[in-house]
Amino acid sequence: MNTDRFETLRLELRRGCLSLAVLAQLRVEHYGYTLRKALSDQGLEIDENTLYPLLRRLETQGLLTSEWREENKRKKRFYRLSPEGEEIFGLLLEEWKKINQALDQIIEE
View 1: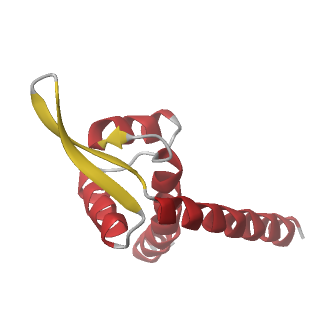
View 2: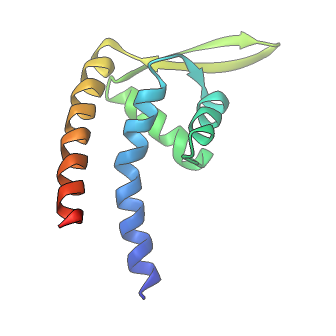
View 3: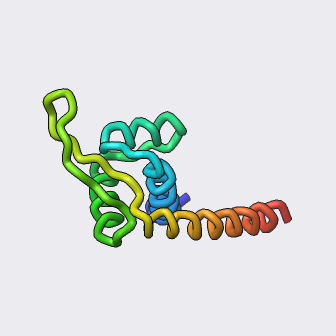
């Protein structure tokens, strides 16, 4: 087996899934650590070096809002879906369900 090829394809598959998972979790406000923990608790590990660039990209795209606040004497950046992010999340979720349903049928054949 070509492990490099597998790893490249695995990362491509994961990239879109991570975006959808982050959008789903940010229907409720989180800061980076609690977001990573929530995803991990659901079985989806994400490295900080992947999470923070993803959060910045989603915010730049207008899908997230963020604000710095002090909590326990530490400044933390809290993220949440923007109104546009909520709309896009709903559309992406429907698309994901259609793709998943089609893949289930294709794989079962």
